[in-house]
Length: 153
Image (tube, rainbow, N blue to C red; front, side, top):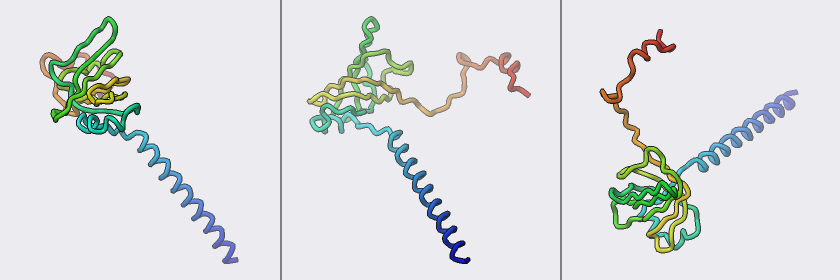
């Protein structure tokens, strides 16, 4: 009888190991899919020939004084920089995000030109600050509305 209990325990142990491996494997796959890796402008220019034709992400700062927005045909162009040796001229079709502005961090997704100096973006993402700022007088909280709030005890 002791062998029957041992076999039953082995089945549970093996089953638990299989489930744990499956959960760990799925977690790692999900993590890889959601990891956003991007090249800096210097890296993208250096690897431009090998990255030719591939969808890549390049991240950097929108260089001040380089933004050209044409709302009538939804064309946006700007220079992406990491303030190193190389800058990339980005062309993007579509409305820029609300937080898009000069000297702001962005990540663009698209294809780099063969020389590494141009980039055609199909997606533009703004990197925002995680810094909290208390409201000032201009952007103050409506205290009357807050006092009427259903969340107030």
